[in-house]
Image (cartoon, rainbow, N blue to C red; front, side):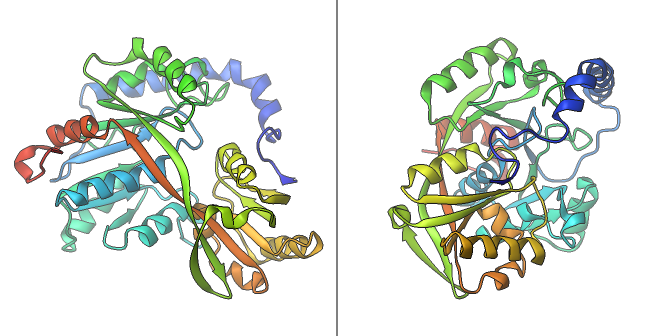
Length: 355
């Protein structure tokens, strides 16, 4: 295996173990002071559209991108035009390209995607330029409190130890678990294992507001997008069974991807574990291609997010087949969740609750 995947130790883990407990109280004091200011409305700005924030308490992945897509599609099904506003993390290392923004644009070409660290400025520019939107979906917005939002949706990985985690840099919490009280909606993602989701929900309950809607989201692979000689075709997941593959994975928490890949019945010959948002340049692409040939694995399996970062890299893989799974998100109870959103952004804007 190349790079750090699954249980592989990250380079900063040792330093964090030593210095984290010392630094975490200072970090917590800064966060507490910052939150008190925003709770009092100091420094908060508004845009002339309702804002739905989708975020989390921790660093790393919680399935935010597929949930934002699900939410946008639910809104569009009700005649509401969403726009996504995001910081675009990692774009400075990828020639101005944000992998998540590219994924959104590919999946939902009619949804405006605003990439700007100053979300207020980006939204204002869209509206002044005549961009059409009825509502803003704020990607990774829970800590971006400068922008007023009408509802906060917080995603929590049901299979992670978020309720008992520690603050940065000792742990992965961006702010204390008690901050989840600000959320109008909490979604437990990766909730395929009911017992893990039950345990996480019980641990979070004491911190939630009384009227907080709690939903669960389960991820599954439905199909495969198979790129061969530059053309995409779609195959069912069993197509992978028995095939020798090389995996390329640069998401924050790759264990779910690798587990599902193993369950597909293919034979994983090598895993290239990349850093989250790591650029996939020609040199890396050549190394992957060489490894695939050496291992007699003519198929590269990667995530949609990584594929969006490849740019011209697949040119290095002209003799290989590049496969990425297509995900479906099942959110339950979706009706209660959408009803809360409709109420928060204002039914008078033409949004109707689910039947």
